[in-house]
Every structure is written in structure tokens, then in C-alpha cells.
Image (cartoon, rainbow, N blue to C red):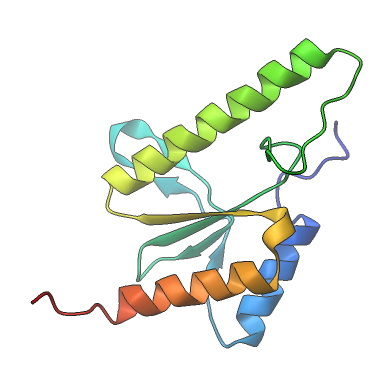
Length: 132
């Protein structure tokens, strides 16, 4: 378990490299202190636009398309991954309540499709369309 990185994973680095190559500047893994004493540490943050990006690994976050559970101690892993999914949902709720936009990307959507999604949402946040 110690060999599994909590940050700077391959998919995170690939996304950040792609975003940086496209001229975007951001913060990586900053701690955001939210109301109620909640703390969240997104993988990539655009503070001015209040955009938080999380990169979720298929195994650890329970991707329905690519996940596989180990055969040994399956109930432990099922419970652990479900706990991770619940924590993910709670963090999104805290951030959105604080006025942040949140993107969760699967590792299998990186780097290009994920980077394109981030760019599109950033563009929408930077250039909101006037309501008619």
C-alpha cells in the first residue's frame, strides 16, 4: 500500500503536462479550507475561476467500466472503495456549497479528453454568456 501514491500519479502528471503545454497555469494539490472546518485537496486548482479538478483512478475510485476487485478479501476492498466514493461525493458537495465548480476525471479519460473538458469549462467560467 505504501507504494501507491496519493498525489503526482501518472494520470495527474499527464493531465497537468497537457494543460501546461496549452498555456494554462494552475496550482497542484493545494489544501482548500472550507466552511465548517472541512479541508479538501484537489489535484489541480484554478483559484481565480474557483475550479477544482480531481483525477480518479479506476481501481481506487471504483470506475464501473474498468474496475476489478481482488478475489482475496473482496468484502474489505468493496467497502474501502465504496468509502472512497462516498468521500468523493462529500468533497464535491462541500466545494459546490462554497461556490466552486468541480470536475472529476477518470484516469482512462486522460490526458487529451480530460484536458479538453477542463479547457471548455474554464472558458465557460471566464466568459459567461449573458442571460436573456
